[in-house]
Length: 89
Image 1 (cartoon, rainbow, N blue to C red):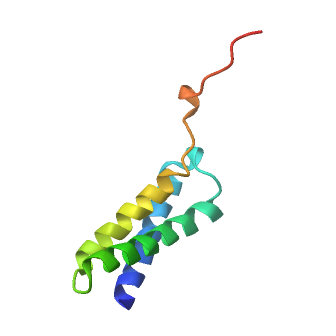
Image 2: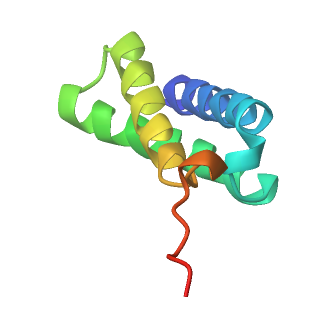
């Protein structure tokens, strides 16, 4: 269980770090994004481990990455080109 948690935290950090470097213009501050990725991965590992039970290390990590990606996607802001402007008054 400890290795699942450690691996999940590392994967969540790596995913959040990649998102910060790739999508920094659409994300809030780095100090919010990195802990969100780690917390999402840890929660995903807990959820997957609770559903599948012990002995499914790889699937637990897949579940952790999926929940971390979903958590990080909630932080994304719309791109500037898709932003609607109000009608001229």
